[in-house]
Length: 125
Image (cartoon, rainbow, N blue to C red):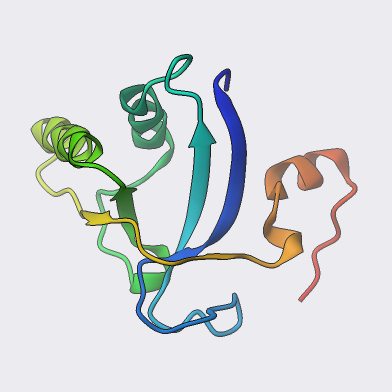
């Protein structure tokens, strides 16, 4: 998306340090999105999130739907997005939390879809 400078796959939302895919601990799989707010707004990013996420079913901690914010404005925008989703569905399971420690995921998780599409990525366990 225009205005997005970097997306990093990782883990956040937990209190235990150094989660990994094999040992996620109390964290949630997440993405860190760096963006230029003069090109793309936080609301536009939330709109894209709402198209891709599935916050209509409860999930265990690793796969829960969550929006992490770093300002009161972002918190309010996230809460408004959840409210909009709730108008379309009886149940919305998405947490809105302040940003906490973020741990970069293993390299095979970075750009995962692009690796799969290009055939360059190999599924490694």
